[in-house]
Image (cartoon, rainbow, N blue to C red; front, side, top):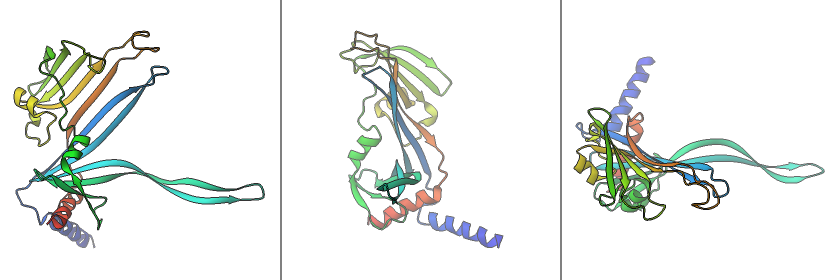
Length: 254
């Protein structure tokens, strides 16, 4: 029995990988951002954060966008005093919207699950701008001045910038750029311009806003805030599932 189970498991891997080139390499990155929001009533901070996951295989890209899914049960309470509807939570889980496209193609296909029969076309450029920071300028080469460069290791460099002029309060008081040459082979980029200029991959940007005392910005003190945008290389634990998504795209994009 154990041998049969092992054979079936091995067969599933072969079938999942069968339509891909043997020299193909599947790699992935996780993109994350966090932004603190200020409560105008008391100056307290509430963090907004989000993430998505990019998988690369040859010329194909899969972007998985997580979302919270909740299942409910519905019923009624019937007695002599009341007759009302009730709702209770059965299950909470994280699900994903799966967007797959071929590099340099303007449109891709979005699948809800690996078994979805139906799919939707989407605009690749719009998705990249909305979820992967495409087009974002993380520093201004004209207005930002390098004030400190810290070599964290042979591979990792931290550069600190301050603006020559703060035109308005949307400008941070300082910008930290984190670069790593070990990530130069990664498909994803936060900034092609910076990667090319520094010969290292920009993997994290931190905007720091200093505290603004009460009376300068309004009725409350604005605390120190940090806006963070980053990506990390990620191990692909669910290779069979991801490759099956790519194969599904190949089937329906013909």
